[in-house]
Each structure stands twice: as C-alpha cells, then as structure tokens.
Length: 60
Image 1 (tube, rainbow, N blue to C red):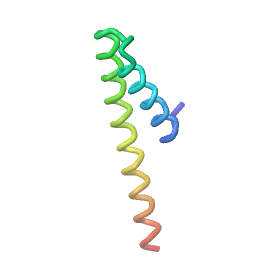
Image 2: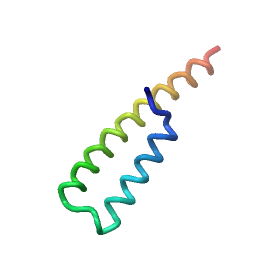
Image 3: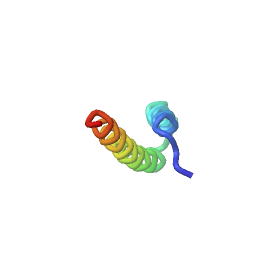
Image 4: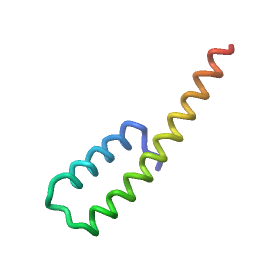
C-alpha cells in the first residue's frame, strides 16, 4: 500500500520527535534517520509528480 503525502509527513514528524526526545539510543536514532531520509525521498517524488500534473493541467 502506498502512503499519502500527509501520512508520510506525519511519520516523518514522529521520527523527528523520537530522535529529539533524548531517550532514543544511537543505533535506533541512526535507523530512524535512515527511515526519515527514505520518507523525504518519497515525499519529493510525490511532490514532483503533483507538480507535473499541475503543469499539464495548466497547458490545457
């Protein structure tokens, strides 16, 4: 199942909260950082796709 942009942003916010809470260990923080980087990449792809759709609609 593909997550929506909003779901990805929500997950990213939770990752940031966990990293900043001073209770998450180094190894877990690194894993969370890696997951966050993946989420950012997915969000960038979704935004690029949305931008292309809007651009195409503007041409019609």
